[in-house]
Length: 172
Image (cartoon, rainbow, N blue to C red; front, side, top):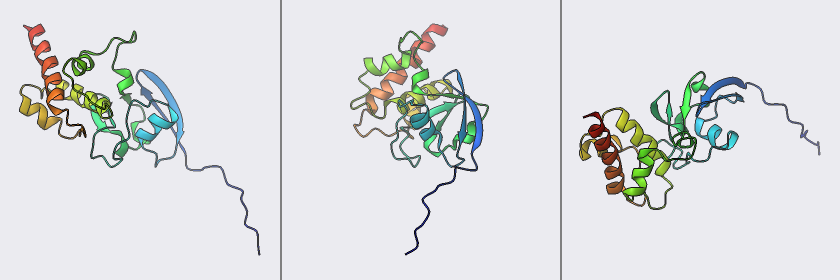
């Protein structure tokens, strides 16, 4: 019987990709098939972004790219070259002080198991920035891409509404 070679070739076709994550520049040699989610979690060890369905249906992996929310499991990492990526790790202040929306999630009991919470917070921030938090109905509509298996939707809506109301009062 002929013995097959076990020698493997070094990976080819890698693409040098530079982008910013939570304010820090990174440059990696990426396989064009790697998702942003896998790069964040496995290469950069930013495990706050969760892997849920891995099919873009649950929203657990939501991050911001140049301020827009995206599901990172469906985003090729090479596609973010030259862009700013913000994960849940980049939301709180450098001293650890929670972002007002993170605090509102705690105050409004907007989490149970907490697995979906990072994606919920990132989508909630986008909902607020996009101006879709005027009513509970609008919040529910624009948060509909984020699923919570525990059913903490009432608290999530209340948390986003609380921050929207605080922002509206501070503008007066």
